[in-house]
Length: 128
View 1 (cartoon, rainbow, N blue to C red):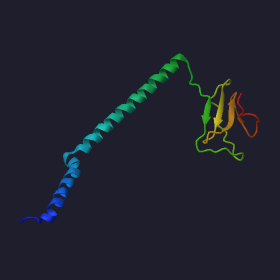
View 2 (spheres, one colour; view 1 turned 90 degrees about the vertical axis):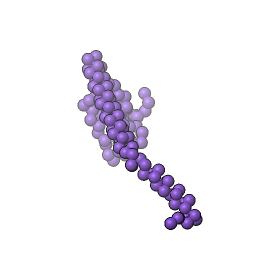
View 3 (tube, rainbow, N blue to C red; view 1 turned 120 degrees about the horizontal axis):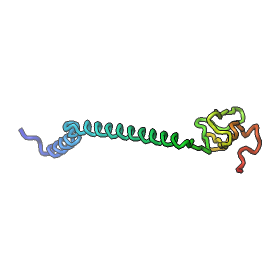
View 4 (cartoon, one colour; view 1 turned 120 degrees about the vertical axis):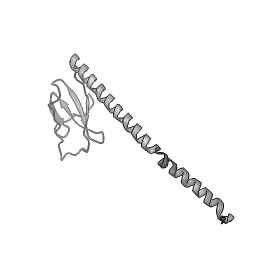
C-alpha cells in the first residue's frame, strides 16, 4: 500500500530530520568528545599545578616574597557601622597595602602591620 502523495514528502523530511538528530547518539560521538575533553582538562590542570609548584620553588630558592599593594574584600560594602578588620599578620613591617571593598572604594590601609580604617583615621584613603 502506498502512502498518499500529500503526506509522502513531509514524512520523508521528518524521517531524515530524526535520522540526523539521532545519528550522534547511534554513532557514539558524544562519548568520544566527553572522554577527549575530560582527558585534556585533566592534563591542563596537572600542567598548571606543576607550573605553580615550579614557580613557588624558584621564589623560595631566591628568597623573594610576592608583593601585593592592593587588597579587595569580597562581599563587603563600605559602611561606618562595621569594621572589616583584615588579618595583618602576613604583611611586612615596611609594607603598605591599600584595602578596597567589593565595589572598589577605598576603606583603609594596612601600614606597618596595623589596620588603619578610614572612619577612625583621617586622610587614610587620600593619594600619597
